[in-house]
Image (cartoon, rainbow, N blue to C red; front, side):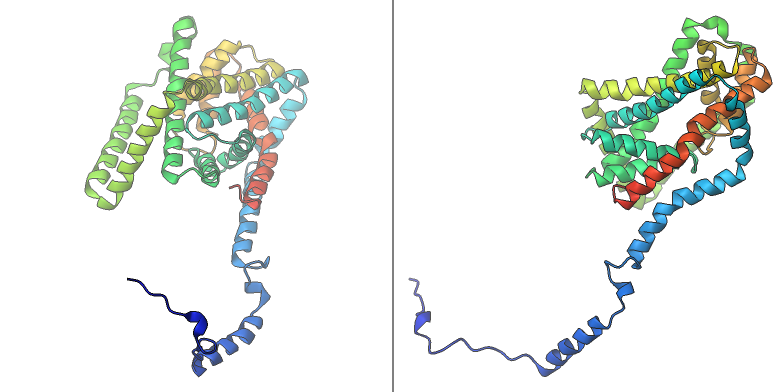
Length: 358
């Protein structure tokens, strides 16, 4: 049986326990201490460490761009001088293909992840990632910006990392398929004796690939701290890839966008070349870009600048273009795709960092 106590019949209020004198004194002393605390240390103050770090991250892209422009100013000057005398309509066409390339990158990013992302913010993140990609090598800047964007949209770290891996895998595979298609469709354009790397280069590339695979396998089997996160990453990547390939829209976005990316890049180069009077067709320029980026695209350079440029000039010269005109075309291409959108992209990157989207 349960009984209830007649609380209403209690004589007077319930007794209260007095606070210890020591606790009361410490609580009273904490009030003036908190009031005397400097406003610079408060969380909402603009001089707080978190706010200072956020402002520093906001200005960092602009500072890096300024340093890079000062170190490589002759490229901007020479490219701008060449483009000043070029056909403006072809340059507008090149600018159109450049903007279309950002849209294509956003489409591929969406195709590499099952979660639905906001289209506007995704496109803005890829525009900002283009600026970051020109500062750090091997697409590290673009991947870092994209990963931060995915995390801000509620995507778990494992799924976001798996999305970057799938994106990085789809682009070279699709580019290889496009290259093979061009070689089958236009076999007369390929000069095998001049463009195919020699045996020593092929052996070095194969040895580097094998070394990387063996190193990853050894680390996974010997280092227990890395085994669980690596196995979890592989499991997540395989699961997401299986889910994505059951959705036709994601398959089209991923592989169609990845195949269209080198074609858009080649269209930019061809437009600049036509503006300068380059005596090559769009097919020759596209094949030159595919061969050059395939041969030296794995060299870690910011935005591929340097090795790919030299290989592209060499390949276009092999196809019959004058050396000076081929070099001017590559310089104009870099000015149009790197230097023109670099400052707006850095501003977008800073705004997204300031608004905590990244």
